[in-house]
Length: 508
Image 1 (cartoon, rainbow, N blue to C red):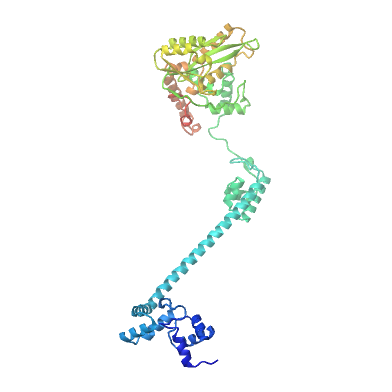
Image 2 (image 1 turned 90 degrees about the vertical axis):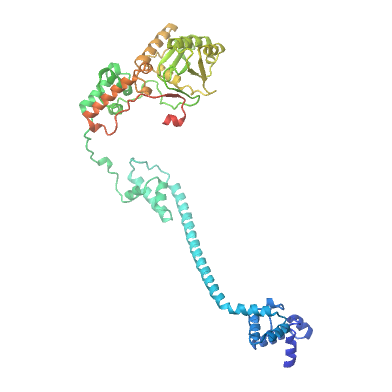
């Protein structure tokens, strides 16, 4: 059906204020299809007619419709604009705002373009960062997988610093590292997984066996001569030194004969080379003692440690009891006795005798012991309070809080003269213990107090003895300086002594 132009114009006016019909409403009212109405509106808009297409409200018009409204009112006076606005359902302020927007559109386009350009640059930069991060994570994942495979395949002992590795093991290690690197692992991490350094890997990759066994090493200029080695062995073979280690021999040579032959480590090295450095007796490898109940001794007769130990007899199942008291500062045995029973009365007698002999009654003295019944009897504690002695005890169910007494018992029972078959009588045991105490206090050079005797340290004579040793060491160094790359042995007197020190104090 063909519609006249007048009919089309009348229908299109209903799309404008004050009617503001939508295309759907107008199609229902006029009986015209929506497609036809859309075509009429499209042709009218192409001729410059203001026919909004997306909203009946002016603020919802498209930019093109607003721009057409500005063009239609551009040549009108204010009166004509007012008439136009009332006819179109607009306000003059809206037309003015749209005109300002059109005037600033070019500037906004430039700013928008710059903003878009910055946004694009930022997005590109972020994209590159994400790509790098993705590559890094992929490389890390590949390296982790390669190292896990290497860990499973490379379970072998390649030795350590200074150790020799066979050519077969070297080739296998190089092949494993190369395989891991080909799968994405870094050389440093692959070498660390195998247990070798990068320089070691490169050296092994070049091939060849370890040449150290074939190397010719010149003899050091300060090496011991054969006569000097023979002199060291001769001193160790002397009857008086036959049962002593080098740590005991050297101080005796310095004190008794004013003779310096070599350092303690050199003695051990010469004995080892001669095949004479073997573990003797029933001694076991040393173990670390435990801690608490801490006390500090700055001088003799400040802290004592005491305990009771069994002495076997020749009768199986029968024992004697050795009571020993040691001053932890000087290591001197200040009290001792052997009984055939263990009780608080015997403990009281031994301690009372030691306190009176040393003259420390009513003076600050700490007496440390374990938790045995003989150490905590009521009569003993009452007597100790009378004498002004402070008691100290080990932790319950801890056997290594009384290290000084335990070490003294070990020295006692590992003496070469200790009877392994046991003592025949109580008198025999007392005689042997008396001889041991005299040897320990007056002859034994104690390793913890710079190899002076406990009596020398207890009486304050250690300073002069150690100073003379230091002088002899400096004299020996002046005669053969090539044998002394560092300082001479430390012969300074030992300072205060802790009972069960803290680990950091013990390390210091």
